[in-house]
Image 1 (cartoon, rainbow, N blue to C red):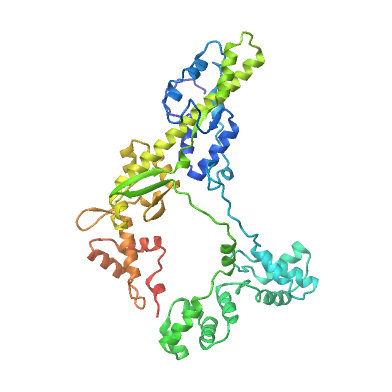
Image 2: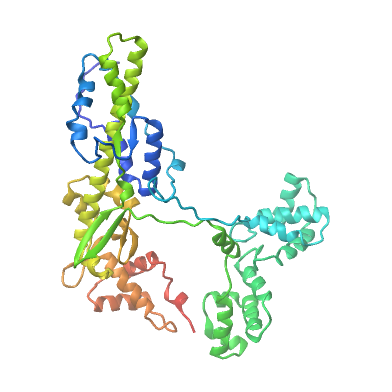
Length: 489
């Protein structure tokens, strides 16, 4: 049975302008520059550079500009029904547009020349052209090269490749023929390319080297005792091959020179240069911290005088046609949009500055001397409470912005950490504990690396009573392997 009833509830919704502002705050410097360029293209009422009568940061431009206010409130301009929100709500910006060059319009244009690069797979095809192959062999070779991943491995079974060529290429062959062509690919550069696994990759690279006593020993170890080598059972290897510790050490040094990802080296060399543009800079001036916001985040913008003059012309006109009214509606829409955008940029600047300023003062001891152990426990709520902003706003600033300090350029979110109690009952940052743990492991005797139990004891002696499972967790976060895998001879 259907019933009708009234239900009263309160709800909170963000306006399109607020959503736009949040997106602007989240953008790092380069993406913000691109967003600004897009707005300039879309809104001809918005102009860059300084105007004779207008300055970007003067409040009078927005609140006390009688000329503009007259237009907005004039009864002679029939634009009261314009839905400004409808224009502003189209704020979806594709990710591919959030990429920009590392320079602004007022900077000297600099371009870094890049050599034309050849892809990894095309380089292998070019090398195959130096071999004398039949048409069928070349088709097989090119199919195999196409099956090699970016790390340089052929991670497919030969029988699967044979079946795939038959079904997709109409190329009928057998495993023996494919293996024969695969041996040719194994002779290509970089050494190890086309290997089916790490074991074969290391063997291929060793066999390409000039034979020596230690190269031969390394080949023997990888070929026959690979499992013992990976598990670092060095005593077993010395007994098996009747060699000294020094001989084994030199053989292992040869293995450590090899590249476990031969294709990866090619990709690194051909990759485009990437550069981080810091959003903030912290300097130490006469013992005091000084914070600056990257100038690219504070563009000089003003509202087009031409558009304002168009409205004045309409206001003074005695005969107002329907087409003129439509034009005025368009002009007012663009003026209001430009005014809001300039306000949003100013608010973005203020939000970025006050948030980073609070972080800088919260971590003042660290920024003055750069010692990571002086980083205090700091969570988003700490900063949000200091500046009176929402936690989500602080998160947007921290997750996507970089700060240049005397100790390097870092992502702001790296300064945030949880707290733990030391034996004195004081709150200490988990970053401090990780730093101490990393230092202990770096200084350990690599012939007898410290197990997690021993690391737990050492940290406890230093005043950090931490459980063994927590040590293991921090070690994993620091990308440090277990004790057995850190062992060296």
